[in-house]
Each structure stands twice: as C-alpha cells, then as structure tokens.
Image (cartoon, rainbow, N blue to C red; front, side):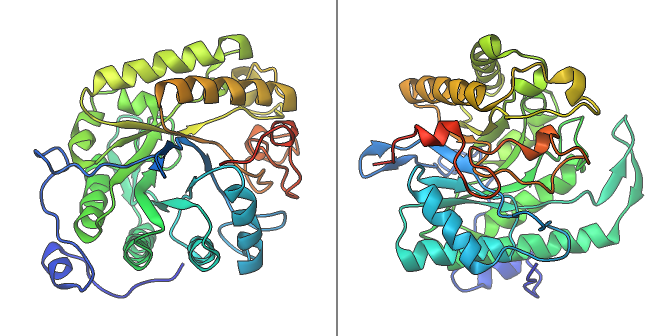
Length: 345
C-alpha cells in the first residue's frame, strides 16, 4: 500500500490544496452529500463488487494484480455495470481508476478504505489488546484513500470507510469511536459522499445510532444465503431486511453494498449448516434476476457480490463458499448468469 506521508488533522486538511474542508456532521441540515445512481438520465442502480486478486494472488503477500489484469477486468465490468465497489486503497485500485480515466470507460468507483482492528475486543465489546501495526496501516489507508479520491474526483463516486467493522460476528471488529474518527478524517478531506459498509444486524442495532449521523448514506450487506434462507424464500427475506433497516433509520439513505448467491459450498464451519442453498450457477442466476427486478422496480441501488471468484478466500476446501460468489469464474470465464446477461446501455 502506498503511504501518503502527512498528518491529516482538521486544521491541516483545511490548508491542503484540492481538499474540501467539511466539519459539519453528515446529519446536519443540508450537510448530507447525495450519491446519485443516475447517468445520462437513466437509473443505473444495479452495480458490482470487485476483488482484483486472481489465482495465486493474495492481498497480503506474493504476486499482486498487474495493471494489464485490472484493465482487462475493467473492460469486462464496463460491459454490464456502471458502478464498481472496491475494498481497499491500494495499487490495484489506482490501476482501475487509471484505466477508467485513460480508456474513458463508463464506470464510477465506490472507493474502499480498509480499516483493520486497532484494538482487540472481547465478546462484551471491551478492549483487551491494541495493535500499533494496525493503527499505522489504517493511517496509511486513510491517507491513500484521500489521495485517490482527490486525484480522481470524476472517477470516484463515493467512499466506504471500513468493511464489516461493527457487526458482532466480524473478524475485523473495531471500536465505534475509532471508526467514527476515520470517517470524520476522510469526510473532512474529500468532496464525495462517505459511508461505512456493514451487515444488516449492525444497522438494526442501537450501536448504529452513533454512526448514522456521521455518514452521507448507509451501506448495508444483506445475505439471505448466509442466513439459512432457501432460494424460494431469499428475495422475500431480503425485502423484509431492507424494510427494517430503512425503518430503523428514517431519513438516512440506504444502499445495498453486498447481496449475492454463491455457486458452491464447503462442508466445514458455519457454511455446512448455515448455507442451505441450493447453490450452483442456476440458483445464482435465479436470485440475480429476482434481485435486479425488485431493485429496478423500486429504484433500490445495490452492489452485487461479486464480479469474479477469488480462490484465496476462505478455508482449505476448494468448494469453500467464500471462493464462489463471483458471476465469473476466477479465470474470467462467465458463469451461467453472465452468459445470458445483455450488455449495459
């Protein structure tokens, strides 16, 4: 990850060229920045999540995605979607932004800033350990995310600070106060709308009341497949969750930043009992079309999870569910749903 060596306190941000100074909370009157899913007068709310790592690549070490590989992915995604969500502010993220700009692709990026746990929490949410390494990594991610957002203002549509850092089951849990600190730092330094992406359980909890006023829109993950829902009940369950999170935070715009259906499932851990399925390419296509029709008819913006399978994810089993959420295989061959998918306008 490329680090931008500077301290981004509110006073310094105000003096940085090209950076906007915004000190009001997002919930203040007229302070919330809108995110638009309208392009050329058309609603384009059906979008995609993107992880760039191919077979033999991992985020932490070893070979990384090349500029050519990311450019290939960008061209594939541009055929079907208009907004792409990524998870971290790294080299591959800039490769995508450079490709969008240089090739004039009809894509916008929801930029991610990965927030690692600076503190270890027990089940009661109490701090039991701290990590200076994670704190420094977070500082670098925030700084790099701000740089990318301001360098590629036309290409970056929104910014997600942290992914599943608050929901109780997450391996990446951090304190709410530390998350809010990072959100405020980013929001003070950019002009795009800023949010944090988390599970629906968090947005339904009282803990979300502290975060909601800090974001321009709420980004929610809704996974019927992870919640013991069979295919025939998956859409109704998702609709019910959507209604509940909106009712919990009236007036706060919501975007679904993860929803999907995997094409395989392993036999280890929670997936063996929590993923009832059926799984496979045909069920994925059925749910993909159902979500699209529902969201399109109600103008609900969403990001399908995800574009490409990533084999580095999950456990040792080759059929591990985490490896199989893509609508393309990891070799970039289309699964059934994309074989039958018309190109975007």
